Length: 182
Image (cartoon, rainbow, N blue to C red; front, side, top):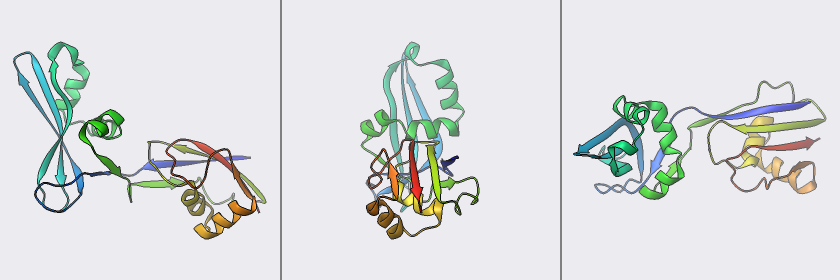
């Protein structure tokens, strides 16, 4: 029987970026957008706050965009400071590249295994699904979901009792499956 585990975000991740005012390299989303109109062009930023000094920084969403090129729904969501939009934009690779940021998901996700009834079986088939693009090592997920130490999971992987079509040692943010034989 195939079990489904889900990796879900519990809160917004921290933004990794160097602060200009202090030595901190972590920012948290303030929950606010800034939209500036200059005749027929718009600029929009997501405001983030330094976790060290509280200084505000702006992450560019778009610059000098023609008013007609911005969807009205997006503009409404920006004006309403929509938290769902913040989560979508933070995970956008284009926005991350444009602003030279990375996300720190430490403590911002959880693994839902659907209960512990699968732990006593001889063979466990599991499908892991990601609700958001959260980079996590599969070995860590398997250890947490099965109640094992990471070293034990590494040993099972080395002896062939843990198999998967993906590399379990590298970080993944996409769905995968694995089989554990005890």
